[in-house]
Image (cartoon, rainbow, N blue to C red):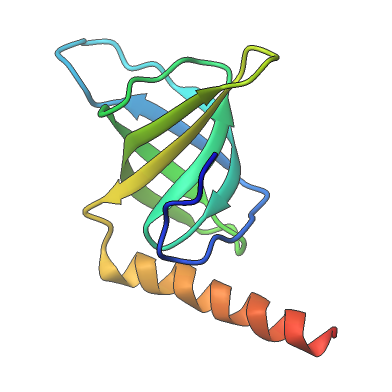
Length: 118
């Protein structure tokens, strides 16, 4: 997938549960996904369920310190893998500045730790 983000990506071993907020469907389907990377502008993840480009999903993102960030994600890219999985690129919609700052703080800490290990 071609890099299109302006913000540095960070890897987290986290899970995300999402509900489709797009359309008039009354049912809410929760889908577990594997987060590949996260930045202050969006989340990249892999899932087994095909999602719609342009659809907005409600998300509960469990971050490194076990806090949960409630967010809305808009799907901007989808790439199907050979093993029938989907790699999705999303952007945050209306992410509160406090939560964006929490992601930036983690990024700063991981950069400093990376430099100390060199």
